Length: 566
Image (cartoon, rainbow, N blue to C red; front, top):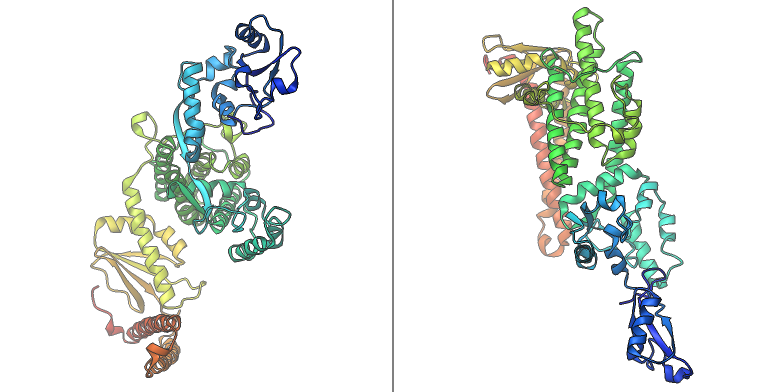
């Protein structure tokens, strides 16, 4: 019944002591001399007095209430309704009880949750909540239960504020651990956190824990993942800083949701991606599928907004101040502001601090009355059937897929030919379908900006094949040609690669001699044999890639090596 707590509901039991008896005759409550028949129960002392008088009629006595309190789970079981003033029928009790959702851990399902349900039904006649969300239990990165003796206990404050390895070791001292256990725990900390724990902030910690819910009932918390989300917060900060610089001090956000008909292709695309993110986020949050929710909002910010759209914005806002371009600039700025505003509100429940800080810096609509992002409207997907502009655009998203495949292929060619970052080769895109041609034309400026090209020319199958180019066939509909003339010297590159090839071939020959000696498999440790085998595979792959690069440069020397038609 009791866990010897200092505070709680005092047990409503009273021990009867008769007038004139000795301590030995009375017995000691809770001790071996206790007289069990002396106990009476009452909510208050007067009620217990009545019960004692019935039990011991005609005798004079005094009552002594048990000094212990009821188990903590008894008091906790009253929590859903006692906080609203029960047993008094208060306005709060009428308004807020029963509640909607309880969030707790699965390890106290019967200690606490079941008691709340039973006490709620018994004392109020109502089940205290409609749903129960069971969060995961946090373990270390290796899946071990956190234990002081292992030194793997992660204090959330140490992750939020950061801590040095020296101070981390100090947290183990001064406790009840044996000196040997302290040393063992400190060794574990040194292995897991050789540089200590860097400052990650509250938002990164929150996002990591929510994102980890995909693992099920247990979370294997890797601090490096939290650090990664801290860096992501920096990326969001830089995105808003870029926007503020390019929106300008006189910028006024659109007062209504954007109509997409006259927007540039990139703006149509990013609004479509935003619509998908909102739809996924809202549906996942309503189902408590927090992993899907974090994946949706992260993917939008990282892969759609920062990696692609902001890069597509740069050439537009930097363009000449012509009338037609000014229209495109305004539309692009409106789309950028819309994505940042909705993206911050979308992310706010998980990362409340950085989103509030950044949202306060964004320009506001005149009709926006919310003083804080906490009370601003949550984003809603834009669909024509709801009387809103339709933002989802599958056609423009398909075009962007083509554009991104082109960018990926160009980057691979730049790497293959070791082009310096400053090199701006011309890109030719040969298309064999009208859809591919439309995609390449729509996003030609963006492809040039992101892939680092001087310009993009879209070719038809009947056009002449470009010469002095590196070539990649993306698919049956698209082939790209990257003009390398005057950027690389094939003869010089062949010589450099030839020297590299000879060096790698010698390394392979030496390794083959080393591993081919008699008794190698029986005398050499298994881990060394494994390292040598992996090194041989890596060297052979390097020979293959270097040989392929030499052949590509040889083709450039012999223009006839290019086919007349791809």
